[in-house]
Length: 398
Image (cartoon, rainbow, N blue to C red; front, top):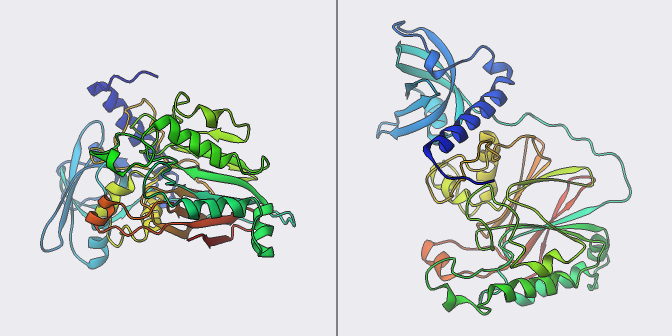
């Protein structure tokens, strides 16, 4: 698909986002009967309204008041959030460019005092796995950064040795022997030319060599383990989301491996009956600074908020470049069983409404950039999921 990035392309992209997320919102019982922003009645003071729109702008004031503009294709409405702490907390959670439903009362046709706000969110899912004594495990990881001087080679080799069954602990060997999948959520290699002066921090300065080494590592694993790889911002790939698979010209050794599946970002994939949503997690850089009670020490909390927004990268115009395709493929639909990301180099696991949320950490020690930004990575910790019970184990290879 060729995208020229014209104004009309962006208009079509955001129109599809609005339509898709509005449809998800309207499936909720508490959004029944909602109109759109441009249909808020004009001239009726204190008339009760319920309408859906996209957040066009947001202003926060010292007294806690928040004013946002919600828009659709035909117009926009100014919405003021003030009053008790509950409504102020919801207003603080709003992100620019996400789609929500607002309940309130009109001051006039173009201004509303908000009483509540509803996100698309995911339904409560009750998952009852079929009973099975043949447990299948999926090992989730990301941000290996092969080629970097800070790549933790010894830890990674211990990890691969475990997957080959080379440990003295029977329980760990049992899990390794029943591991069917290794899922790598981007940044398999450190890349070349990703940031200024990166060459000073590279042990392997050739991108082809980085992927060759990665393939050599992964080829030591048993063929029974299916390896799924998506791209990250350090990989050889298109920089915008959604991102096609890593370029085959650079990663040819991986493409030649029969047990490797190269997918794009984002991807839905079914593994032994469990639906995974895989994304590298670049948008966490954008949303964490704007989400109350979220931080880079617990990235899984921000991932839960993305599930509430039903979108992988709701904010446009920050660090995550978005491709204006006719269909917004970053909308989270259907709801996955497991939501897996990486990027921030901090492992964390959460559960939200029946969905297992996993950020899989890194195999790289603290970089100069992370040190300057005050980010402390949590390397060499691997989440392992029992796909029969959805129970998660965290194994440390440091």
